[in-house]
Image 1 (cartoon, rainbow, N blue to C red):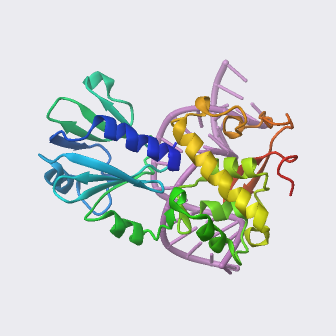
Image 2: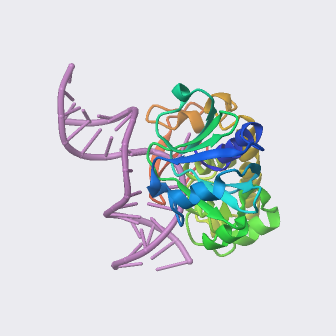
Length: 261
DNA sequence: AGGACGCCCTGTTCGC
DNA sequence: TGCGAACAGGGCGTCC
């Protein structure tokens, strides 16, 4: 479930569990997830080191090692982290396991194997390499308005462009547009200033609210679209059946009454 | 520039 | 009920 709020949750989870303990061994189950490094080299690099802190940029999680290097995790569509002690508690689809001297293990779990694990000497290096824009929650209102100027694409696709602002994916772009009352196919450059400001406020409110809810749909406010994104879903504000369309290669769910096209 | 598509993977849901 | 098809919260490359 890895958009910005999910990855922020993983960051906090990791920070609360897996820091400052020497790594005894790294077990790579799916080598294809590693980019730019072999399982052997990763093991050599991490053995005896500790995770010292974590930082998030968009959908990327960066974990600082006590040797100056950083582990970079991207979670694809189905990635997550789990910390456990008993081997029997190892989650299914654990693709990379970090075993600590204290007997605990941090598992990088990813059934579909679309995530990626890399090592970098600096998060900025990787951010540049992937041409990521500012983290969506670090973007000022002014910069947001500037990014919109002259853009002729659809607003949903625009929100999801990681090189403009990093962290928003299919689910949260739907939620932001719903809360702002904007149709996903609206042309971004044609939105008036009031709409753009509403969109910006919705972006911040939705992402922060989702983080507070630990990115768990069950804990989101009743006014949220998120848990209703399915064929029988209805608008939480007016009960109108939700509609779907394709945008940016993904399925957008929206309320035709609150988000008129 | 922007959009559509295919591909990488595999588990789940849908529709006949 | 059973089965294959379509779909799923991402990102990248290609083509038009």
